[in-house]
Every structure is written in structure tokens, then in C-alpha cells.
Amino acid sequence: MARQGHLALRRLRPRAPDRAERRGVRVHQDIHGEARLCAVLVPAGAGAGCGTGRVVIRLAELGYDCVGVDRDASMLAVARRQAPELLWAQADLATLDPAELRIAADFDLVVAAGDIFPLLAPGTEAEVVRRLAATLRPGGLLVAGFGLGAAHLPVPPTITLPEYDAHCAAAGLTLADRFATWDADPYHSGGYAVSVHRAS
Image (cartoon, rainbow, N blue to C red; front, side):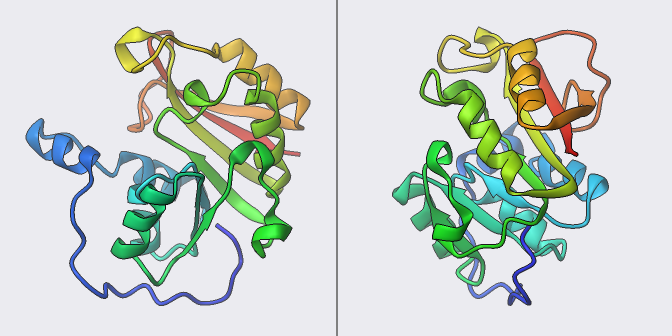
């Protein structure tokens, strides 16, 4: 989250559930696991590739000062309808420039949930990590959860954990923790990982 001053966090109108919420209700899953885990890790954050804003909105409801960034205008339109009081910015993560968006690059937390990294244009992963890392203050966290195999992704996997860790290291981030789920289950191996990297 950016230090943007005070945001009105009251609900202005009922919010329609997004696809993840509808699915979570059907299978009795915790649909706010991403926000809950991030709330334990740090006091403030931003959503990269925020989509319809589910994670950003939940963090704001928990009292966090949030900014949501996504390149898809239709998803941002849904997010803006659901939480017009929050800051939503349209940008491609591979060319993200906080100054251009008029947001401070001093985040405590950047969350990249929802398979952002495996769904990036091939060859842009290192640049996206670099740009997200550049938005963090020293000690800030980049938290990314993504599928590593066909069972967790709609497309063939494009990035491995060693590749992702190498991109993070090149961007000045060190691995602080890794989980198998957003419930912080220990990661040993498997088809999904939530990686927590800390800025120097």
C-alpha cells in the first residue's frame, strides 16, 4: 500500500461477488486468504495485477491504505464500481511507472495474487519483478502466489520457482518465506507456491 493519506473506506453500495468469491462459497473455501495472510505479514500494501479488486478491497476493509493496478480496463471498471473510494490505476506491470501514475513508490507490500507471473507475456517476468521491487521501501515485501503446473493454471507454466527467485534476487529481493497455500501451509514441493521476498 502506498502512503497516500486517508481514504474513505466505507461501503458506498453493495458489491457484487467476483468469480473467485462465487466459487469459494460453492466449495466452502476461504476467499480472502490472500488478504488475511498479507495482513499478518505487513501493515500496508498494494495489489499488482489486481483484476476486479477482491484482494485490494478486502485489505482496505481491514484498514489498509491500498492502490490497485491492472492493465485490463474492464476488470478495473468492476473494481471501481465495487470500491470507488479506492485508487485504481491502469498500467501494464512490465512498464509500471509509479511517478506517471502519481503514486508514491514507498509500499510496505505488493501483492501479486491470481497467477500474475505465469500469465505474463513470455520474457517480461524479470522486468515485472524489477518494477514491482522498485516500488517497495526497504524491508517491504513482494508476495506472489502462483501455480507451477497444469493443475493450477489455465495455460502451460511459463516460469519456475528457481527462475522467479533469480528474478527477485536480481531485483534486490531476498526470499523471506514460501508457503504452499495462502493459509501459510509449509511449502515442500507441489503445484502452487506463495513466495514472500523482502526488499534490501
